[in-house]
Length: 262
Image (tube, rainbow, N blue to C red; front, top):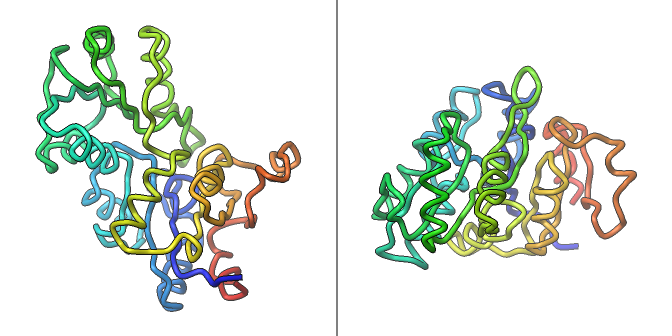
């Protein structure tokens, strides 16, 4: 078996719960870097930019470089700038996605005369935003979503995710979006391509079977499921063999020990 040289880490439920680091996460990152393993942060979160994600991790005591962060806001900005240059975008999102789009030179508009509607988590979501996006899509705008996660873990439990907003858009427009976040392999392929890394040396780690583990399957890389977020041990009993993660850990704290064996 080829050894692991690259680890892709989810954030919410894997390294963080809200703004608080999972117990042992900081030590695990330090140990893996000590092994010479390249660390990256692959998250469906669209509310932050790469830069502000680094600040969020630092505030929780977790070290990261901006070049190591691949959030869905960055994925969407890269996708639109690469495949649809010059197109106007209406966002249902927070500042993270909009700032990443502007950083890539993409024009962001506030009305229905948009070529693309990009949807992520928006904690100030309104009927007015829904109506504007609805009109744009009905006029022929492309519908792109950061992810379809229905919830995400915080300190006191869970909160609704971007998927709840995406579901509203799907229902009223009758259109399915292009979803760039996990379980789409787009983020993994973008990350590996930008950093000239190999799939066979890469491991993805996360707390959600339907996103993190499935991303591993879709991208052809090995996966680790941690039980500190959405997934629970009893969920594994319902899975077919081909759906199972390659490894299961109680938390990310056990990851350096697993890697030392691999």
